[in-house]
Amino acid sequence: MPPSFYCNFFLLASLCCVLPGSQTKGYQKKGASNHDINNQELPHCQKITHTITDISLFLLQKAVHWPKQPNIMFSPVNIVAAFTMLSLGAKGSTHQQILNGLRLKLREMTEKEIYKCFQHFLHTLFQPNQQLQLTMGSSLFIQKHLKMLDKFKSVVTESYHSEAIPIDFTNIQEAMMQVNKQVERQSYGHIVQVVRELPLDTVLALVNYIYFEGIQNTEIQAEHVIKDKFGLDTGTVLFVTMINRLGKFYLHKDKSLSSWVLIQHYVGNAMAFFILPDLGKMPQLIQNLSYEYIFSIQRHINPRFANLRFPKCTISATYDLIAVMRTLGITQVFSNEADLSKITTDGPVKLSQAVHKAVLGIETREREVPEVPYLYDSLWPKVPTVSFNRSFLVIIKDETLNLPLFMGIVRHPPLHTQNYT
Image 1 (tube, one colour):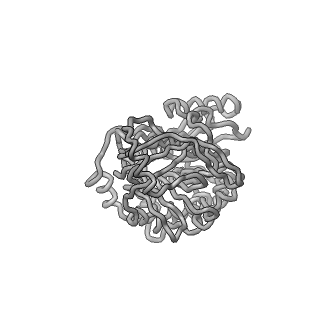
Image 2 (image 1 turned 120 degrees about the vertical axis):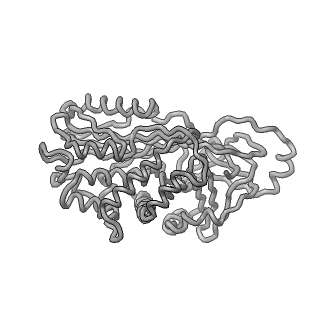
Image 3 (image 1 turned 135 degrees about the vertical axis):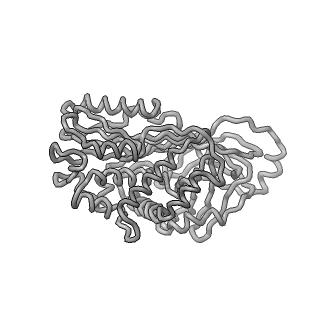
């Protein structure tokens, strides 16, 4: 476990996803874990992890041009898993378009193997872990007069750990209240008012959240909280709360990307990458990132002493997934031409609303760090200072599955961290 600062990450990702309500408990040490054994049994699933990472990087490039928001944040595996589940309820060209758009029509794999891999991914992510607090949730809301087919409902519940909930969409305001109460209950009160609007013709909606709290052991020699400058892309300068730490970090200056790379390991197989490009180099960084680089970068980083400054912040972003999926060529499922007759045969239905919401909180827990004045006076000036005081990229992945759980760019840290709604 690399020595560095202690962060809590809170991710609330996508209103359209398949990761269901659960909370992990119980810690498993690395080594010959069940995860490793499962990966050995399903080696072909690595092709899908590669595909999901490629889609993640593609969407990251597109996200720069999406409607302006202060920050970019989304959950790649959530989006892909959600639409993979939805494809099980689709037929004909709607089914084919979803799989083609997600680049899951792999020549070397059958559809059955693809679905089995996603079940494996979700099963792995739901493994109990006491120290990694992970709560995920998904509910499929369907107009109550429509009968959901038992086979699809069974797959949603058993294979994707999700819920299918009948609801009366004829009263949109009341329906939104019910959806929000359901999500608040599933998220143990962490997420409130997640749905703010629904189309009047809504008959099918998919709502998802994910809460992630990473815990890391640290070996910090000195630490204090400061107010420091953070430069926005517009040229404006904010004064934000920074945690200034002296310690040994997995930190590397990558000349090929013109960036500082910081890696944080968390108990429970979670790994975070924070990549700080030189001024003006963010476009170059985004263009040059690849699956191979993300997979191998940790091999080139060794622990080193540094004076690290990192902002305390909560980041959120909300996207219309209809527009996002359009970039992947997925449109029919949202249209009147949608064939979702494997969900219900009571009438033609479409996915009326798809919204992706992601919230990332970087919050440092208060801790006791011995005051050693000579460290400030003698050692600090002799080590490099790396300050994440301008736009930086974030990638969080599951180490066992090698899946990107979260991706984004922090461009405008808020001035507080307490509100996660």
